[in-house]
Length: 223
Length: 393
Ligand SMILES: Nc1ncnc2c1ncn2[C@@H]1O[C@H](COP(=O)(O)OP(=O)(O)O)[C@@H](O)[C@H]1O
Ligand SMILES: [Mg+2]
Image (cartoon, rainbow over all chains, first blue to last red; front, top):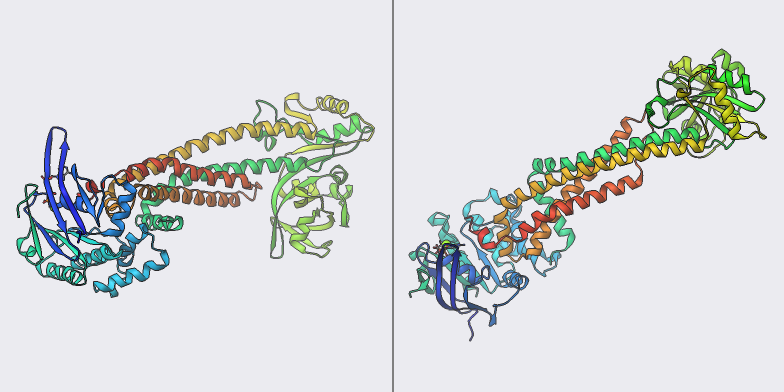
């Protein structure tokens, strides 16, 4: 069986004129369908860079990303946007919700860039919001929510187009440990329903819950 | 796929998040469109005022007006002019056998009231001969007489629209209307003549002077006999009047002459308007561009997020462009509305109207300003790298 997502010999060099930073060095990764993988490493080891490249937000300096057997190299900006929209669900450390916008509208956002007819938007969004247990907060503005609730909205938003992969970059980084555990449980629940999840974290303990750990050090995979 | 109404909806909600700023940004366009629309309406009102004076006057009419030639201040046709009743007598004295009727003419905008109804009308003061000079026809009753002129009787002869508006279908002869709390008895009603001629109330010039304390003649209208040569007679009138007043103080003209000199004045006003419009819309547009650029910077993270969730550069660009257009078109609409209010404010002394082309022009300029000054901020938004944008954390 081919992996859902493959990184082949991926390097990333940030060229800043006077100096160059080699953030990733020849990274090879294969993620199978339904897997829960943790990418761990110290701050600055290249985790976020890797996640952006895996999520097709950024392009590698060298190497290729293959998603569902399709090589994404050479895709146009428009094609990449469409693939991100339908195949990738992002969850960020800082939640990244639209300010002073309702839970419902935040979750609907990815649908606005999809082919889903607008008549379906509210129904689909409500379904996802229910999945993360926020059905009685539909009309609340994002700034009226606690950190944990915000992150659950972000998870609902990531799930709405039923993506092949959820990419979460330090999703518990801004939460207290109890709330963080709740969020992790949300991911575990999604994974048990078959969703492929990549969790990026600097926290070794947190990484223990994953089926597999990929450890990054100075831009290379060390185990 | 994002379709247009959805983009507009998002633009509204984004702009609603910062209402004060949105309003201040609109202000430039509001002031621009308002000043243009208000000025156009005033010019139009001025044009209405003047063409009202001459429309429906036949080709056998000669008008003596206070001078409104080149290098002269047009306001002199309203005030400070040297025409007087003596000039009317002079024309009668020297040219009585060649003219069939001569009347002074005083025009003022006044509101007539009957019970609870009101009508914004042009009150025209003239002698009993004005009936013939203006080519009026009678529907009900009769015109006032020489006797009414001399005793300054509070009597009026009203036009078709005035009657229609204040009395509906019935015959109002014998009723009294009030103009600025002075009562006037209706002697008669004119048959409809069409256009601006139908909003008038005619009364003896002597009555008008006494009732409203007006002392300037708008013009003297002379109706010539059938067999007379109009150019020759114009010359003779001029010579006769030179016995009373200086050549610089009056013009003897036909309707055609006057309309062409009005066109000249309006031409100058129109180019002044174009300059005002251009400058104010430019200022408004720069204001929009400035705020949109600030907004793009502030919303860098939002842009990155939207791209991560599947927005293309085109989606982002269109979103910001739509916001700029909504601001400028919104400003245009508010400016238009304020311009309309300003025509109501001046209604009592000028029949100012907003022509349809001014509405179309104001709206299309607003759209153009939005597009022109929204494009650069929209482009810079669309070019934001999502990675840079998300690294704000
Ligand atoms: N846009 C960028 N420009 C220049 N250097 C960058 C950029 N993004 C990341 N880096 C550098 O790449 C390295 C890896 O960063 P990052 O992927 O954010 O690590 P992590 O997420 O593991 O903390 C760091 O040295 C960082 O400074
Ligand atoms: Mg990071």
